Length: 347
Image (tube, rainbow, N blue to C red; front, side, top):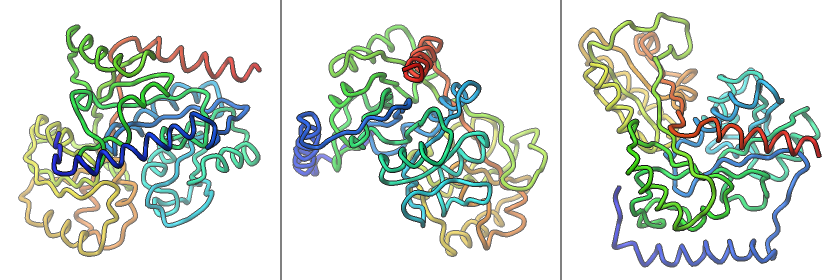
């Protein structure tokens, strides 16, 4: 975790603005709107990389068997505006890479984007039969008052991150008190009792809400686009293509599986240019056989139909899905969510 200490004065000014805005909402000067259907917000305190989308997917797996569920996002870096509903023909340019990822994996879910979350919820209520709305990345969007708010904070960031621009925090850790549930994400697989006690103590300094812990579980790779066999082994060379906030754990996982990695790392939500595609083609061409190209689910949403990708690359391109695994009291977390939905729908 890098702290740019020379930017701490700017962080102090930024924090002043954040606290003032939150105070205006707390006093009712700026107003939040509630809705008659269950609205679950999944958000974070830091910029990028906390695992919001995998946690939204966890909720979809929990909710969809029983309730018609919609996901509403702002659709970061899409090339459309206003309210857009995801369809079978949607692209990442239409609705954004993460909503596109969700739409492809959960065909039964309604996926929509709108920067104005209040308007987006109203349109979902009027145009669809959704019973539950999950808001993706909405913790700071206080114009909506969700019935259940889940805030994510990375395990490592509990140890001393700072506000933007010196650190990666969007708001102080004290913002956790607005949430109904705190989820500590990207935990080591083997958390000791001492680790849990220390993390809970760090959270309890700011919030008395229920605290849960999750870890990232990497799945077997699957082809991007065309149907192909999943490789039986990871021996050989991998061109890793990422446009995410923190690709280090993914690279380490691929190396752990026995591959030699050449990594092309781009910024979070990167829009691949013609020059980028040429660079990918050239880098893959120089790798000796056996070889494959691997990317993230989010990046696959943008690379699947991109122009200029060599046929050899396209045929060897795979994505590595991830899921979150709740390490402690998963049944209790599930029960808190389903009890909220059940109770709200009975009103």
